[in-house]
Image (cartoon, rainbow, N blue to C red; front, side, top):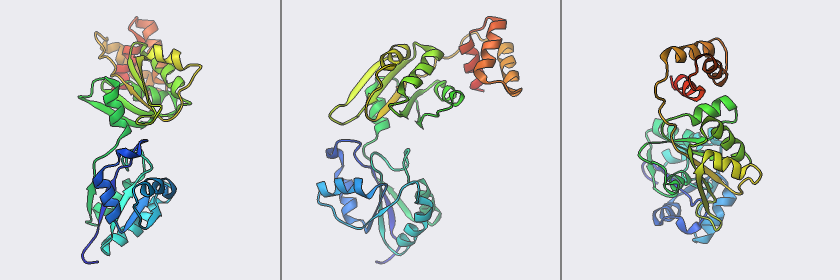
Length: 270
C-alpha cells in the first residue's frame, strides 16, 4: 500500500437486503477491512452478494479501544469500510469515535448514501418535513421525555415496542390532538404505518403493543398564544427552586387560569 488510506461509511439495509446500493457493495468489496457492528449480521448481507474480506467487530463496547487500531491501519494505507447492522452508521449506532479519530488524524472520510429508518418514517408519516428533529431513542424519565416531545418541529424518534403505549400516553396527556405516525418494520414483510392523534394511538396500543422495530413521528407542538409572561416567570421560579416543570405548570395554572400545557411549553422552551 502507498499513501494514507481512508474510512468509507457504508449504510446497511434496514430490513430488505435488496435496498443495498451498488456503491456500497463495491466499497465493501474493495475495502481492506470491514468494521462491523456485528460480524454475524454483516455476514448475512455479504454472503448474499458474494462479498468476502477481513471483518472485525466494531460496536459500542469496543469502539474506543478499536478506533486507534483502525486509524493505524488507515495511516498505513488501508481502506476501512464501517458498517452498522442496519441503517447509517453513527445515527444511533457506533462510529462517532472513529470518525472523530480519522478527522483528527487528517484521514479522508467518505460517506455513501443509503437506507435510513428515520428518513423513511418521516416521509411515510405524511407530517411536515421542512424542519424536523431526530432525537434517537426517547428518554425514559418522564420529565426528559416531556421535554423531548414539547418542541415545535416534527419529531422523529426510535422507541422500544414495549414502551410505545406509555410514550403515547404521556403525549396524549400533553396534547391529545398531536398528530402521530407509528412506523413499524419498515421495508420488511410486515411493514405498517398507523397514523392518528396521540389520544387515538395511545388507546390503540394500550393493550396491544406493536411488534418489531418502531419509529415514532410526532407533529410539532402548537405555538402557545396569549400566555401571561408573569405566569411563565412564576413557573420558571418554581422550577429554579426545585419543582418539576410539569408540577410547577399545574400549580401556576390553578392560580392564574392559564392552561398548564401552554405554561409548560413556554417554560420548558426557555
